[in-house]
Length: 177
Ligand code: NI
Image (cartoon, rainbow, N blue to C red):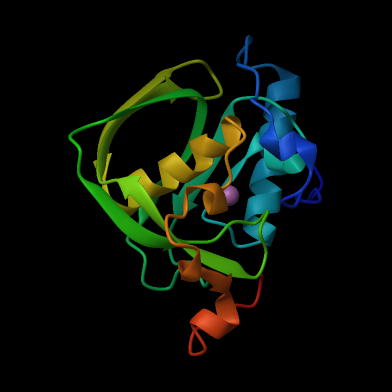
């Protein structure tokens, strides 16, 4: 299935609350997930949410192996997460730099909970239940925000920590955004 265009900030669909998936393991669901996967891989994203390809459903995909967009990042297991629920564990918040395929060419310093518990389902309806921290927790919060119509710039506390990637990090080579 094809690589789809990624909606960019300004598109009203990115600001909508996405709907829960009602039926698992359907050809339609697998087709959306394939498109998300292909699009994320093509763009070298650390994650993608269904609304970013124009599908307003509560589906996110994430995973970080060796990623040229995040050369120093901790690895995160490749995960397809449907109808996620996030519960922060403790109050610790950590700031970290984020980018987004819907906000190409930019980075911002975003506060996120350091630890969280998340639950949801895989494409076959099997439950996923994890306790995570650090970069894994950050990626999950970023992707799940997309399902509630929130883009990371909306979470930046100090807007002087938001800018063009090549200006903020002249030594970082980023080809894809
Ligand atoms: Ni994003």
